[in-house]
Image (spheres, rainbow, N blue to C red):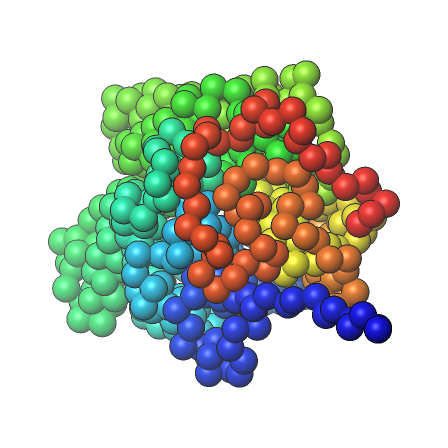
Length: 547
């Protein structure tokens, strides 16, 4: 009597549930919408990266000999617009937030699935409208749209780009609203506020900024479009308007928007530090409330962008002090992450390398932010490459390191497959070295007085610009490598299993990839977040050779 061969059961998951393009374009599954964001964000990141490389190639030589001055103005403007509004702001919330928040709180989906899909369509519509403006001539105002040049003098596509960002803003508002309602109303039984992962806390704080701050930008852009189209005189001084009013309105949103970019990255870092040091985050409550503090205080510091814009010395002093104050909750996070690492069982897998890289870059960016928040120093380096370097260290170094760390950490959960540990570690090294080689020389250039947005410069600054361009080439290679090995992993990567890292959290208690409704049975939470110390039999991580 022969035994019948048994075929292992293949459980349906969100990737295999429905096939065809239509099922993806009309999906209400938060996980699929997260992957749709991944495609869109990657496209816009590629565009922004191409503009960045063209800028660096132009600055390779002192003379402006590759493109004309007006073309250079379009390049740095469209680089900024694409990177800020269509990559840095939506990347982590749109991709990882969409995919993970419902799973981490034990919910089947977000509170408003149709609104979630609409958010992605608005994001793509805004991005493609902006891309259309590139094809038809571009924009030359700088990503800040300063008036009266943008409202009166520029002959480029101010209105299409403004409307594209306006539409995209509604995507952020709806996403933030969806996250807040989901976190309030759809937590699993036993998932109290202080059992939430810090990933959720940071996204909640980010959502507060999106819902409260983004409408201000929307109104500002509408006023700009109306003034440009109908000459109504809100910002034009020749018609009784005030161009400084535009700066107040723009930065009232855009400085909190800095935290829309960095808070989700901090959310990722908290998860990585806990998982790869095998410890609960030191001072969990302080780290959680520091996210809310950053969101609140971020609305009070916009005036440090106006130190040289007719603002009174008294107002400048107040904003300078408030800028120092907002640094405190960020410092709380860094100190608590450091204490978590202390005497932890630290494992240097690829996601952890990105986490450590984030801390290094963010500290440089944060400390130089204190310099720029100091009224006397800022006056001298205002609109120089010192500001460019600071901004990139905080926003690009911080946000991208968190984004790549999170993508590497949760890629096995998203796809069910592992990637090459060797090549991923090489990529992390290239990104860190390339980033520092690109932007650290710009601190020196700015201190020596090189203005930003100039396409020609004195010959004595060429060496530092050559270093910066060489670093950009290394950085580009570091960004391209993950594309190759992530695609490779989809077919050839080792099967990940539910929890390849031995991490804690509800997302690691479901299948990889997750089923359509996230869990086979509704979870009940009876322990705190990051309960590594509660389980003496905590599974060890896979050795690097297994990946």
